[in-house]
Amino acid sequence: MKNLNKFALVAVMAFAFSACGNDANKTADTETVPADEATPKVGEATVAGYNGDIKVTVHFGKDGVIEKIDTENTETEDVGAPAIEELKEAIVEKNGTEGVDNVSGATVSSEAFKSAVDEAIVNAK
Image (spheres, rainbow, N blue to C red):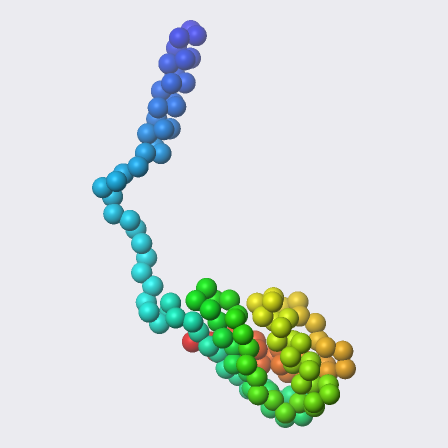
């Protein structure tokens, strides 16, 4: 009976190892990506802010991660504009607006900027 158990164990191991073998003649199953999908994407949007329109351009890397955000705005120099700069860094770090808090004292500018970024993400081509 011991010999039968050993034989069964050896047979199972041989089957398992043969399933892990390398088939050198098999061609690799690689998926090609169209060139327009492989290139970095850019999304743009414009939303009304506290002191005028906030235009954003969101730049994505090849892996779909936000690399940088460019802005054009007329927000107040002492409150809104610095808030946007702070939000840009936080959004790039978190790769989106989820979990990014508004800047205290610049709620309208913060909400508008985050809304513009969300819209630009959707508009990315």
